[in-house]
Length: 225
Image 1 (cartoon, rainbow, N blue to C red):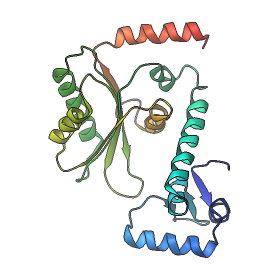
Image 2: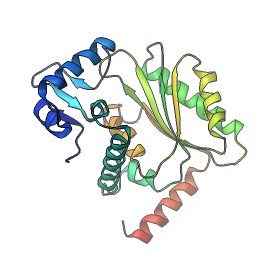
Image 3: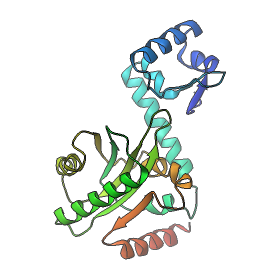
């Protein structure tokens, strides 16, 4: 199976071994239940389907395996992007991958301000002496407003990170996960950087960035990258 982000109707029905009619009925039902669902590209024909819709037609175990294989392939591909910011950051240790979605639409500047506030709270609350954050602000493709993706290095426990986020944005949707090095999280959140006005709406924050840069250089020199 070739893993892609988007499939045509014919490709998707073939991959999932279902009829086109079954696929279309399921698509219509999902859109009726959640019109904002971003699994479909409907503005122009032919329609396209996100790989995420596969979970509607295969077992949970198989879909999780598909996701992991896809992420591993992405990570291997991304690691060949030499001398990019995302490659450099991937050499560092990280603890958490976070997504913050705001209930009320926020501008990119508001999102950036919240990320800077979060970093200040993380640094002041941590006793490890090594706090680092890399974040980007991304615009929703089908609704108003923006959301944030970020990776964190912090001595705080997962529940403590959640509590800090909830204090800053009590009515938003917050997802905090342990950083998984097999997933291309850093490369994923870099996808919007070129659109974000030369770094205005993304940032690398840390209290030890100079030594982080030295460590990256040592790793690259040792690996001949």
